[in-house]
Length: 181
Length: 449
Ligand SMILES: Cc1cc2nc3c(=O)[nH]c(=O)nc-3n(C[C@H](O)[C@H](O)[C@H](O)COP(=O)(O)O)c2cc1C
Ligand code: SF4
Ligand code: FES
Image (cartoon, rainbow over all chains, first blue to last red; front, side, top):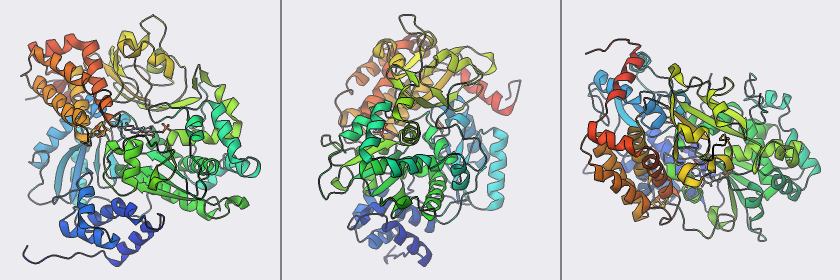
């Protein structure tokens, strides 16, 4: 990029961000950094480019480096582009004991990519992650805001197919009510 | 049937919502406290209850509360630790998802008791939908005058907020959590000062686990003495256990502390026995950080006493023959489980999660993962087992926070109790388990390919 790209929150996101900043005492607005990086990631294509992080830093009147150093610490922040749906398969003990490795291998075969890669059509990124607090319903994966639990190879196939048909993962924004069970 | 206190109403339809929660006795504790109790009286009840922190360390909650500094004119904070990232643990998620108001009521009570006017629930980022459930419940509570200004006309004001993390186990460590809540990297702080003196924004702060805070509700309602009457020895009350692995009925169970481990594993009230009629091989009883124990030592202590689900009994024998209750993440492994492979997933986890501030932890976790990887891929030597032992022994006590130890203990225990399996693995390799899982997931009975 020769010219500096400048990104700005949409009015809607900026309004949510303002509400978040109001949760902290006077002068402690930096506390909003992680929630705002999440907002930025959701708004700017699922990853945090430098302009996306700059947008957050600007919003909070902090130095850009403060946003970069935080973004690079936490595993949920993507510092590179990802697919429309990121399949994050838990690879820790209980999931592993219940066949998580098979799910990963199966997805690799089905999507024609290796763990860590994105499909050529930009639809899926496959990742393995650490325990997601779903060990009693292992094996499991997370995609967007949703947990998919008690996976079998068949269920995994169905999930991939339905996500492909849907064209995107479901994410929960701060104003979107959750309906479970 | 054991007594249930926290999850007594978890199956009632709609218990997630304020109306139903109140219909079943919800917010009665809060009304009682605000109408008839001083903050000091609540702290006293919590002390009497013998409640110990449910996040892993088991520190007496009443004592922690009484350490909170109260300088004039300085705000105090109550922060709920809902980071829940210890592998094998999913009880807080269950509680928050099912009965969010129980946590909220506990937060209001704790904040009143400790004099906090703003409190935060710090929840791991992956639980975003749970955070939304909490926020919806908080909105309900504000609308009903249970949060905000002049709660239930008592003159007590409280604002409660949910803060989401972004994927970092280390942010469960309380000082890392506070750093994260301040918008920084989750690097644990050097202690002292402890959060009770200088915590969030440098102000006195109490950090407690979700389950600990929820337990304050029944303690206030029924009195500390009633809570202390449940349990065994210094393990008072009930504990949520996250049961997973090769059992018939994985899930979250509320137990009265003191239930025999054997009953917990085999009774239909709890885990329902080992899946597919297999034999038990080992258990990690309190989340990934605690020492793994083989069948004979998890069912009975080295002295031959039945092992109980309590802080003391699980700890009996120290690390030589015992373990810890920890977070209550109870991972059960059947006879076909490879201890080496399971340990590798733990080692990889701790390496991934080390914040990197201390060399013994940063480098040690990396080496342990590498060596286990090497063994797993058939390139191990018998000397590697000793090397693993050597590395783990050089971490404990040499780091800023306990993650280093949490990484070392599982390695030490696996070698202590299953050394022969490591040696066999190195000599013969072992690939059986993958194949079996593939059959199970495909519902196949015959090999394919
Ligand atoms: C690496 C590490 C991770 C931790 N993770 C959690 C956690 O996810 N949840 C939790 O409640 N406590 C966790 N703890 C314990 C906290 O530091 C702290 O002791 C606890 O929140 C205190 O609350 P309690 O006394 O109610 O248990 C962790 C500790 C360490 C060292
Ligand atoms: S022990 Fe590990 S996680 Fe804890 S502060 Fe040191 S490097 Fe970080
Ligand atoms: S081990 Fe996979 S969710 Fe806990």
